[in-house]
Length: 242
Image 1 (cartoon, rainbow, N blue to C red):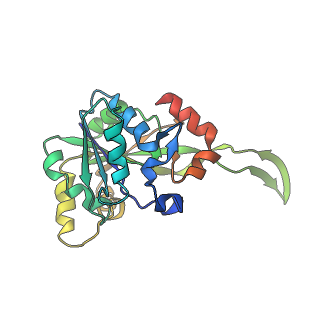
Image 2 (cartoon, rainbow, N blue to C red):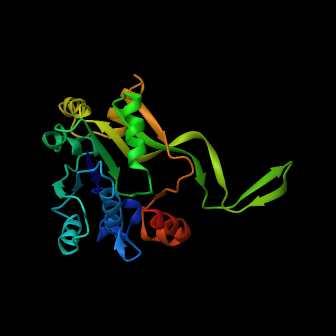
């Protein structure tokens, strides 16, 4: 199975840092975010190649140069120019590469988690759906909470782990390659395609999308260097488990 890392997002939440350096290159423990992800994905036997999609004509060139100078990946790396027209249309460029495999892994670069890819893959195979998305029901909050009754604070809870009413969707998917045909067909109708809303949403109404719950496994959205700084403890926990 091939792993595709989407690393072409503009990273607006990380400005002004991401005006000059791509989000994928946010430093964590002396290495770029994407280097940690590539290293982790390379550790799984079911992954035979890693494809990085980014704007290599722009800031994404920094990603390619990094890996040219740091031969850390244990699996073959391929760099593909993205479409700059939505997360869905980006995948159309990979049709000839991915159609040779029945499934592929899609990982948005701002997701950092020690997700068990093998377990998620087996879950996906058992569900017989077109795509499986990683989800979670538990989230550790960044702020303190209070239990209030009749306007009186009964108890403070500092950064608790709470159970969500709805599952939170994470940016990690395992998809059947046949979904590329749907994306390509949709691409004939519009110039920009959002993977979640234009492709997965309609399929979910047909029962074609399954959810793999990561339980209380740590996860963080690395949107900026300041997020890494604020969540040092959580980031350290994840890095140790990668």
